[in-house]
Length: 343
Image (cartoon, rainbow, N blue to C red; front, top):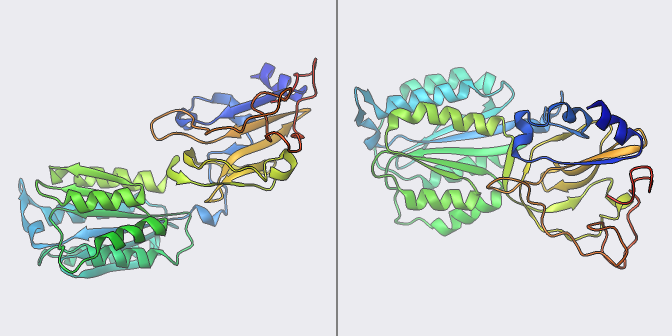
């Protein structure tokens, strides 16, 4: 580590691609050199997460799984899931049969717990299954919130009403909202068609859970995944950051990302490329005479997915920015004998 730090400080360049293993301790002490951090800085309000639980309370939830009613397993799952949220995270919950029934409107988790637990205790199964208005109301409730991540956790065990419902419009609303959505389809006959389309529109996940007794464990896990995300997946446009003009990156047209590792810039960082959510995609920092860069894109499967880099002019550094006909990049290592050439 000391040798690497000394080499960079003497004029070298270090580029670190932050794939999935980067957040699992594989970087070791190299993390100290990065211009970004995996920890949320104190006072960063944008780190707040807003979760809306959309819960099926139709008559079919009166059925039993072993000795327990399905509705009671649902109540237990939601109560335990809220406990893993941070006090400042926003929680909302709406149950549905043929109509939506709000259990608690969007509120900080620490303020909403008592009201939500009271509403859960009073929740009883009845009626048919119509998730359409409940999803619409959850989207509307999340829309005005200032939160870094907004997500719907939807639980349903039956086939939803089709008559009089314009589902293609709902799918477009979900896709345009920027709200994530995870659907947990429980029991033997869930509506996997509608739930699947909703999750595809949101770039989310459809989880099939034949045994509802697993619901508390799964809902807690999914809540933790939303509250403490390490990666964001989906399609994210790339935009120039404050440091882009100095590197010749401000006029480039880059392909969208398919996902990236969630990081926060350190005070000394120069952010050259950002996601549409204003998270670092390419960040840099000086270390002595050299510099360290962190690149955050990942693919949904594994490993880095950087996209297609523009072609360069003959004689330019391989893979350097910008393409032919534009001003060459200012950021180069000092040259032969001091780390050598472009990077």
